[in-house]
Image (cartoon, rainbow, N blue to C red; front, side, top):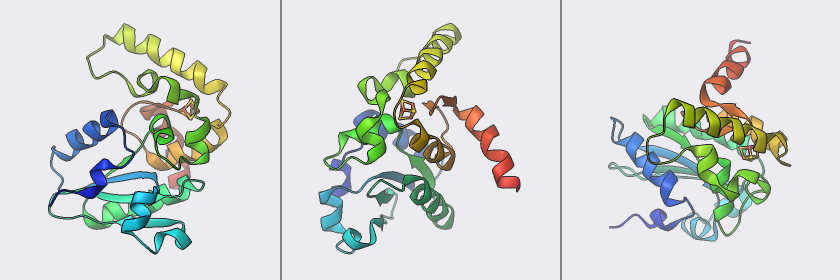
Length: 183
Ligand code: SF4
């Protein structure tokens, strides 16, 4: 049976990246995204609880979905679920959160949504100079983004492997998160 969640609001670019990650070893992928009416139909209890864990096994994705205004906490929950189930955790970049019919506060005002590739990177290879220039412009966009305060805790909870989130690269976010983890 086809996975009905594939038609949800993860943009194709992000979905493709998630699947590339899953092909490296793991059986499952965890994706965090706003809870859509479609997902709410699939998980009837999700409306009241505000969040839902939708599990699909047998090589299919595990999705943890949120209504969106507490994405950092829910993302931490998703990472825990991923660890528990031996899954790969993949959070959606804020640039992709605006695509759903019920985008969260972060997705609704994310400046990066106007040009997602500026923050997530192009599909085609780029030279170090091109990447450096793109990242510099992405950081500038983040500096004036009205939801940067919401974005940073989400970015830290997401521990992304790439992209510019809240003005930081993946390596910079990992370095920022390290003292918090150690305390
Ligand atoms: S702070 Fe940057 S990454 Fe976060 S939502 Fe705004 S533009 Fe996007």
